Image 1 (cartoon, rainbow over the protein chains, first blue to last red):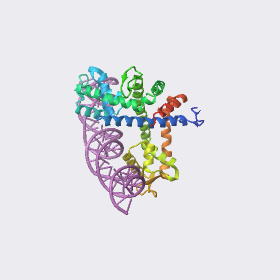
Image 2 (image 1 turned 90 degrees about the horizontal axis):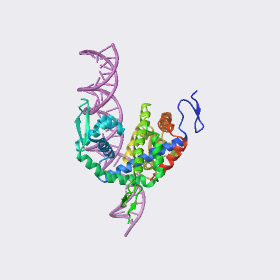
Image 3 (image 1 turned 60 degrees about the horizontal axis):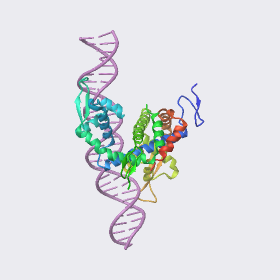
Image 4 (image 1 turned 90 degrees about the vertical axis):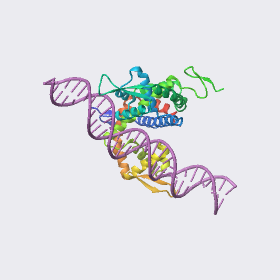
Amino acid sequence: MFACICQNGAVSGRVEEPSDEAFAAWARVVRVSQSLMARVEADLKAAGHPPLSWYDALLELKRAGPDGLRPFQLQKKMLLAQYNISRLIERLVKNGYIQRLPSKEDKRGQVLKITRSGRMMLRAMWPAYQTAIQTHFAAGLDSKDLQALSRILGKLRR
Amino acid sequence: MFACICQNGAVSGRVEEPSDEAFAAWARVVRVSQSLMARVEADLKAAGHPPLSWYDALLELKRAGPDGLRPFQLQKKMLLAQYNISRLIERLVKNGYIQRLPSKEDKRGQVLKITRSGRMMLRAMWPAYQTAIQTHFAAGLDSKDLQALSRILGKLRR
DNA sequence: CTCTCATTGATGCAACTGCATGTATATGCT
DNA sequence: AGCATATACATGCAGTTGCATCAATGAGAG
């Protein structure tokens, strides 16, 4: 009933097997994305900056505006495990880039806001980040590639 | 002399700034690849299997055939730091999935070979891995997408 | 209101990773 | 050969992550 003919000609049950094409694409996604991330992170570090996750978190908090974000909201945006967010927040607070305020609506919770120092860090990191994205990513692709990449990967968001 | 007009209309010096298009594509690569990896790793773990890096290493050693691979060769294939390879090998040896033999050509070095037990682990992991790739990746994309993705990401290999 | 279950966030511990460096062998220069 | 430098691999230490679990509060059922 669920049996079907797959792209690679195999017959299977409930879940199709990935075609060779699919496995090749998967393997490339794994290798290339790992390599890209590593190169960009390395450039950031070489410029004396904190890791990308700090930039991400600060950017989300800046975008969130004056109301800030709750940790669990930040977690959803960043796709990190809860304990990872908890500790990222810990480090950002310790370094003075964000402040942690008790939430008024929910006594369990807290509200995170970016500080002036956090905004400065964001600005300080941007040139190095920008250059790294250009060097390792954008320089190799034309506009059509970029659009296609966005479109295709967009299909994979859960 | 190096000044130029970028895609987004800005004028810059030595290195172009990434266009908005490029930054959007970059952000998507970061988020989606992280999410994909996490979901596939989670499925593997849920099925009681070791991490993907074990699969990768074992697969490379299987493909390498009877001559095996030197650690530095494995390192190049897997794009991991040297000390990471060293420790991955340590764990694989400890679990009996590979064996470490002294190299005859180079007394500094060693030769790694997959064991029978390692081959069994590869076979044991494949169904779960396959299903995860299909579920989280291939199911969302058609053949044209897969080819385009491979082609575009292929441009980014260093 | 009370009880139960869900949600928010933190944390101890073990495993893993990054960094710096160490040891041993190889290679190349004079 | 003798010496300097490069390559192959390992490892101590500190920082980070994953896992399990905890404490506190919220929210819904009766």
